Image 1 (cartoon, rainbow, N blue to C red):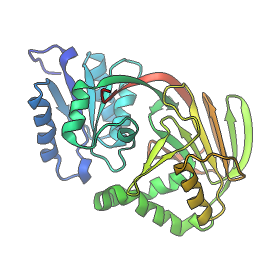
Image 2: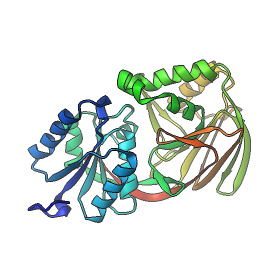
Image 3: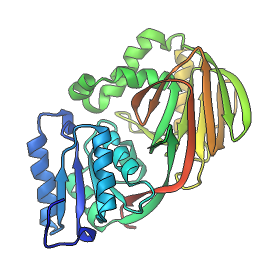
Length: 311
């Protein structure tokens, strides 16, 4: 890092995703972000990593050098990479939301407006949060196997550029043409803190942060009855809809916070979870395709820190 007349403990490292806002406007976004920090007389460095692993590496180096904060300017993938890089260091991550879903911003009450988000980065409060871990790598939001991974795989960068927040709706429609009318099921074997469950289902979610905003419908879905990002547990939600109407009914029940048990839903919590499926099912981690089952996940209690609005 270059030398400046400020100590690193005063500085903010800004990770700017050059593909934010659909790409093609990186220079404009860079000027906006830089101006917002400069107006507040906050010393900062701005880096534009080309990939998630590079973002994680830069965030880890900033934490090692004692930066005050790492500000992730992009979508949930950029924020997740920053949280992975700073995990266990005590250095907080601030969210400057420029992504398609901005789920983490919604969970922590970070405004979508740039100026207001920078205010949180500069003047907000630090909040500890759990992180999940799969194959030695942290995740912040949710991992899953089955139907949700199918939808994520359909939400291509081209769809995100063309349709913004509606990309996941379009992806859902694409996936629906393939298998929503008769959702593809598998025989899942789930081991949660040593307890084994065998169930036929279409989707298994492992949620670290359990609120998912269903845009553009202004619908807040909570994936389980006791979700918390500070309890040291993963929320495991198993869904087994048999057809499209049952998928819609489950979504509406989640939006209403109705978790009454039936033969299509199962909710539990655990620190360690293994998910296997026969046949193998597609998986996703923080919205990115991640191959196929099995998944082996662990909750790491309060391993990350995030900047949230002051009360």
